[in-house]
Amino acid sequence: MAKMKPSSLAVFNSNDVFTTGADSTLPFKQHRDIFYLSGADQENTILVLFPDSSDPAHKEVLFVTETNAHIAVWEGEKLTKEKATEITGIKTVYWLSDFDKKFFEMMTQCDTIYFNTNEHYRQSVELESREDRFIKKTKSQYPAHNYAKSAPIMQRLRAVKDQIEIDLIQKACDITNAGFRRVLDFVKPGVMEYEIEAEFLHEFIRNRSDGFAYTPIIASGNNANVLHYIENNQECKSDDLILIDAGAQYANYASDMSRTIPVNGRFTDRQKQVYNAVLRVKNEATKMLVPGTLWKEYHVEVGKIMTKELLELGLIDKADVANENPNWPAYKKYFMHGTSHHMGLDTHDYGILWEPMQAGNVFTVEPGIYIPEEGFGIRLEDDVVINSSGAPFNLMRDIPIEAEEIEDIMNA
Image 1: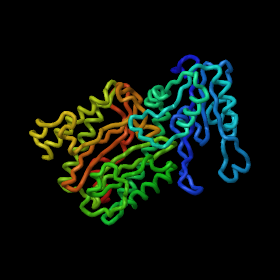
Image 2 (image 1 turned 180 degrees about the horizontal axis):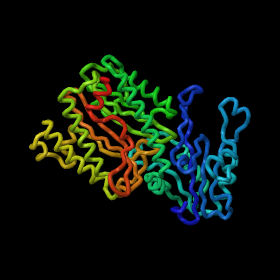
Image 3 (image 1 turned 45 degrees about the horizontal axis):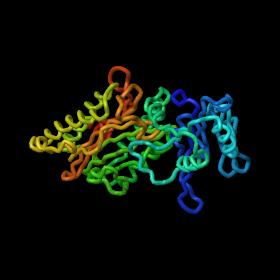
């Protein structure tokens, strides 16, 4: 609210409940912005922030669906006004049926309305969201108002994590750790990728996780060379590696882990050679995640480290580097994705990539080397918090990552 223009209000809508056909729906997932600002985790909810309201009761307003005994029996308990205040700290709570009337009253007292458009740099949403419909309706009903965007404010707020958020991400990482250790005891030649996925999910749910933070990748053999492989339906064979990209979600906060393990419990010499190269890149990249680092320059430096490793592995040569396209360096043949992204309520969280990194940012670190001609790919990924001074803090410090440690656990 402190960052809003004078005489303005901001509106945040919950997500839709998405249908799958007939009377079935997907499990509800709250819009991260309204959850971040209020803690309200229920469908059909609207938050209005109006700091300059002449009525003190309308500086913060929450609208929720009116509940009753019938709804409680069929769908479970919904928020009462009292419970909504208890959860969110917002004293003024109205039923959603009163929204148009109350909103009109507030809009006659303000000049600007902030819309919560999706401006994430990876967004590619084709569905019309509840927010989109609200924007269309509001522009039609209030054409004389000024319009502004909440996204720039929310990106800055959400990019810097409070300690309570870091604690929740840590909990998600700890649950991921439990899942990974379960899998290390489970994997052997002949298991199916989906069985490994099931082991993760079992351990996640029994630890009160919300499940996977994103669709998991369980990619054995050459499947690892498909960056977004999610079929998870192939048999894991003895000499193969399995690239695992899976993380638990806890209290709506994500974790994001990648590990690569040998199906039979032992890396070959070549596999270990490449594995340790990836690990070195990850460790060196992590050291650069400090306040003041620019995301774009960081990736250039990581590329130099990766180039050195690929030269030593014999995957590229000096001529490849000398003749490389600056827009697609030689190392990109074997490491074609970025090294780090913001993480938090979303796996690919809000953050302003053209501004320097700052304390409280949470980033992944996830280099990889993918070699289709040799039948395997390796990615290693941790989640780290940037500190105000010194090295970043690794939230996945207890998750096995050294090749020898993984072998020891798998053969214990």
